[in-house]
Length: 208
Image 1 (cartoon, rainbow, N blue to C red):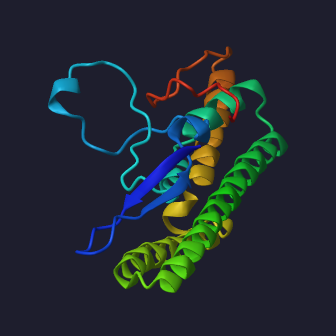
Image 2: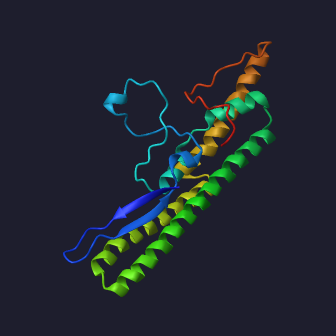
Image 3: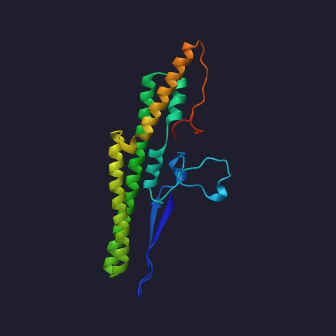
Protein backbone atom coordinates (compact mmCIF):
# COMPACT_ATOMS: atom_id res chain seq x y z
CA UNK A 1 0.00 0.00 0.00
CA UNK A 2 1.01 3.57 -0.52
CA UNK A 3 1.37 6.11 2.22
CA UNK A 4 -0.99 9.03 2.78
CA UNK A 5 0.95 11.75 4.56
CA UNK A 6 -0.70 14.57 6.47
CA UNK A 7 1.65 17.35 7.48
CA UNK A 8 0.50 19.40 10.43
CA UNK A 9 1.25 23.11 10.61
CA UNK A 10 4.16 24.28 12.71
CA UNK A 11 3.51 26.43 15.76
CA UNK A 12 6.08 28.92 17.07
CA UNK A 13 7.66 26.49 19.51
CA UNK A 14 6.66 23.15 18.03
CA UNK A 15 8.10 21.12 15.18
CA UNK A 16 5.77 19.69 12.55
CA UNK A 17 4.42 16.22 13.23
CA UNK A 18 3.93 13.79 10.37
CA UNK A 19 1.05 11.32 10.29
CA UNK A 20 1.56 8.40 7.91
CA UNK A 21 -1.66 6.69 6.89
CA UNK A 22 -2.05 3.66 4.57
CA UNK A 23 -4.25 4.15 1.53
CA UNK A 24 -5.33 1.71 -1.16
CA UNK A 25 -3.58 2.56 -4.41
CA UNK A 26 -5.44 2.44 -7.77
CA UNK A 27 -3.40 -0.57 -8.90
CA UNK A 28 -4.40 -2.51 -5.79
CA UNK A 29 -8.10 -2.06 -6.50
CA UNK A 30 -7.63 -4.36 -9.53
CA UNK A 31 -10.59 -2.80 -11.29
CA UNK A 32 -10.56 -0.50 -14.28
CA UNK A 33 -13.16 2.22 -13.87
CA UNK A 34 -14.06 4.99 -16.25
CA UNK A 35 -13.11 8.39 -14.89
CA UNK A 36 -15.67 11.12 -14.31
CA UNK A 37 -12.97 13.76 -13.94
CA UNK A 38 -12.34 16.26 -16.78
CA UNK A 39 -9.45 15.49 -19.12
CA UNK A 40 -6.56 17.92 -19.12
CA UNK A 41 -6.13 19.96 -22.30
CA UNK A 42 -2.75 18.47 -23.13
CA UNK A 43 -4.20 14.95 -22.84
CA UNK A 44 -7.42 15.55 -24.77
CA UNK A 45 -5.97 14.21 -28.01
CA UNK A 46 -4.68 11.01 -26.50
CA UNK A 47 -6.99 8.17 -27.49
CA UNK A 48 -6.76 5.91 -24.45
CA UNK A 49 -9.12 4.80 -21.67
CA UNK A 50 -9.00 6.64 -18.37
CA UNK A 51 -8.79 4.93 -15.03
CA UNK A 52 -10.68 5.99 -11.93
CA UNK A 53 -9.96 9.51 -10.71
CA UNK A 54 -9.21 9.69 -7.01
CA UNK A 55 -10.85 12.97 -6.09
CA UNK A 56 -9.87 12.97 -2.41
CA UNK A 57 -6.94 10.58 -2.22
CA UNK A 58 -8.68 8.70 0.59
CA UNK A 59 -9.75 5.01 0.61
CA UNK A 60 -13.43 5.94 0.12
CA UNK A 61 -12.55 6.78 -3.51
CA UNK A 62 -12.07 3.05 -4.17
CA UNK A 63 -15.69 2.42 -3.17
CA UNK A 64 -16.92 5.25 -5.37
CA UNK A 65 -14.95 3.74 -8.25
CA UNK A 66 -16.71 0.39 -7.88
CA UNK A 67 -20.16 1.93 -7.44
CA UNK A 68 -19.72 4.07 -10.56
CA UNK A 69 -18.70 1.08 -12.67
CA UNK A 70 -21.13 0.14 -15.42
CA UNK A 71 -21.39 -3.65 -15.86
CA UNK A 72 -23.87 -3.53 -18.76
CA UNK A 73 -21.38 -4.77 -21.35
CA UNK A 74 -20.33 -7.64 -19.10
CA UNK A 75 -23.96 -8.62 -18.63
CA UNK A 76 -24.49 -8.55 -22.39
CA UNK A 77 -21.37 -10.64 -23.04
CA UNK A 78 -22.36 -13.19 -20.39
CA UNK A 79 -25.82 -13.55 -21.95
CA UNK A 80 -24.13 -14.33 -25.27
CA UNK A 81 -22.31 -17.18 -23.53
CA UNK A 82 -25.30 -18.58 -21.64
CA UNK A 83 -28.71 -16.91 -21.66
CA UNK A 84 -29.93 -18.52 -18.47
CA UNK A 85 -31.35 -16.49 -15.57
CA UNK A 86 -29.65 -18.74 -13.02
CA UNK A 87 -26.33 -17.90 -14.72
CA UNK A 88 -27.24 -14.20 -14.49
CA UNK A 89 -28.05 -14.48 -10.80
CA UNK A 90 -24.78 -16.27 -10.10
CA UNK A 91 -22.74 -13.56 -11.80
CA UNK A 92 -24.66 -10.80 -10.05
CA UNK A 93 -23.97 -12.54 -6.75
CA UNK A 94 -20.25 -12.61 -7.56
CA UNK A 95 -20.25 -8.89 -8.31
CA UNK A 96 -22.20 -8.15 -5.15
CA UNK A 97 -19.93 -10.23 -2.89
CA UNK A 98 -16.81 -8.71 -4.41
CA UNK A 99 -18.00 -5.16 -3.74
CA UNK A 100 -19.09 -6.05 -0.21
CA UNK A 101 -15.59 -7.39 0.41
CA UNK A 102 -14.14 -4.08 -0.81
CA UNK A 103 -16.42 -2.29 1.67
CA UNK A 104 -14.95 -4.41 4.47
CA UNK A 105 -11.37 -3.78 3.33
CA UNK A 106 -11.88 -0.02 3.16
CA UNK A 107 -13.56 0.08 6.56
CA UNK A 108 -10.67 -1.89 8.07
CA UNK A 109 -8.26 0.54 6.45
CA UNK A 110 -10.01 3.46 8.14
CA UNK A 111 -10.04 1.60 11.48
CA UNK A 112 -6.26 1.22 11.29
CA UNK A 113 -5.95 4.94 10.56
CA UNK A 114 -8.11 5.81 13.57
CA UNK A 115 -6.04 3.62 15.88
CA UNK A 116 -2.82 5.20 14.62
CA UNK A 117 -4.20 8.70 15.06
CA UNK A 118 -5.50 7.98 18.54
CA UNK A 119 -2.04 6.84 19.65
CA UNK A 120 -0.56 10.05 18.26
CA UNK A 121 -3.21 12.15 19.97
CA UNK A 122 -2.48 10.49 23.30
CA UNK A 123 1.27 11.00 22.88
CA UNK A 124 0.88 14.64 21.87
CA UNK A 125 -1.48 15.29 24.79
CA UNK A 126 1.07 13.82 27.16
CA UNK A 127 3.73 16.09 25.64
CA UNK A 128 1.49 19.15 25.84
CA UNK A 129 1.44 19.66 22.05
CA UNK A 130 -2.08 21.04 21.98
CA UNK A 131 -1.83 22.65 18.54
CA UNK A 132 -0.70 19.37 17.03
CA UNK A 133 -3.51 17.54 18.82
CA UNK A 134 -6.06 19.93 17.32
CA UNK A 135 -4.74 19.28 13.81
CA UNK A 136 -4.80 15.50 14.24
CA UNK A 137 -8.33 15.66 15.66
CA UNK A 138 -9.45 17.40 12.45
CA UNK A 139 -8.15 14.40 10.52
CA UNK A 140 -9.94 12.05 12.93
CA UNK A 141 -13.17 13.97 12.34
CA UNK A 142 -12.75 13.57 8.57
CA UNK A 143 -12.21 9.83 8.94
CA UNK A 144 -15.36 9.55 11.06
CA UNK A 145 -17.37 11.38 8.39
CA UNK A 146 -16.02 8.99 5.74
CA UNK A 147 -17.01 6.03 7.91
CA UNK A 148 -20.56 7.37 8.15
CA UNK A 149 -20.69 7.85 4.38
CA UNK A 150 -19.42 4.29 3.87
CA UNK A 151 -22.09 2.97 6.21
CA UNK A 152 -24.87 4.64 4.22
CA UNK A 153 -23.39 3.57 0.87
CA UNK A 154 -23.21 -0.04 2.04
CA UNK A 155 -26.83 0.06 3.21
CA UNK A 156 -27.90 1.42 -0.19
CA UNK A 157 -25.81 -1.18 -2.02
CA UNK A 158 -27.27 -4.07 0.00
CA UNK A 159 -30.77 -2.76 -0.73
CA UNK A 160 -29.92 -2.04 -4.39
CA UNK A 161 -31.05 1.55 -3.85
CA UNK A 162 -30.07 5.02 -5.06
CA UNK A 163 -26.72 5.52 -6.84
CA UNK A 164 -25.28 2.40 -5.18
CA UNK A 165 -27.57 0.28 -7.38
CA UNK A 166 -25.62 1.10 -10.56
CA UNK A 167 -23.35 -2.01 -10.65
CA UNK A 168 -26.06 -4.66 -10.28
CA UNK A 169 -28.77 -2.86 -12.24
CA UNK A 170 -26.41 -2.18 -15.14
CA UNK A 171 -25.39 -5.86 -15.25
CA UNK A 172 -29.03 -6.98 -15.21
CA UNK A 173 -29.87 -4.52 -17.97
CA UNK A 174 -27.01 -5.78 -20.14
CA UNK A 175 -27.92 -9.42 -19.57
CA UNK A 176 -31.57 -8.87 -20.49
CA UNK A 177 -30.50 -6.94 -23.58
CA UNK A 178 -28.38 -9.93 -24.55
CA UNK A 179 -31.34 -12.31 -24.12
CA UNK A 180 -33.51 -10.02 -26.25
CA UNK A 181 -30.83 -9.92 -28.96
CA UNK A 182 -30.63 -13.71 -29.06
CA UNK A 183 -34.42 -14.01 -29.21
CA UNK A 184 -34.71 -11.51 -32.05
CA UNK A 185 -31.86 -13.11 -33.99
CA UNK A 186 -33.41 -16.56 -33.53
CA UNK A 187 -36.74 -15.30 -34.82
CA UNK A 188 -35.01 -14.22 -38.01
CA UNK A 189 -33.54 -17.68 -38.49
CA UNK A 190 -29.93 -17.07 -37.53
CA UNK A 191 -27.95 -15.76 -34.63
CA UNK A 192 -25.97 -12.67 -35.54
CA UNK A 193 -23.33 -11.66 -32.98
CA UNK A 194 -23.69 -8.05 -31.93
CA UNK A 195 -21.22 -5.74 -30.27
CA UNK A 196 -22.25 -4.13 -26.96
CA UNK A 197 -23.27 -0.49 -27.32
CA UNK A 198 -20.81 0.78 -24.71
CA UNK A 199 -17.15 1.64 -25.10
CA UNK A 200 -16.04 -0.64 -22.29
CA UNK A 201 -13.24 -2.71 -23.79
CA UNK A 202 -13.15 -5.00 -20.76
CA UNK A 203 -16.69 -6.30 -21.26
CA UNK A 204 -15.70 -9.95 -21.60
CA UNK A 205 -13.11 -9.99 -18.86
CA UNK A 206 -13.82 -11.86 -15.66
CA UNK A 207 -14.35 -9.91 -12.47
CA UNK A 208 -10.94 -8.98 -11.09
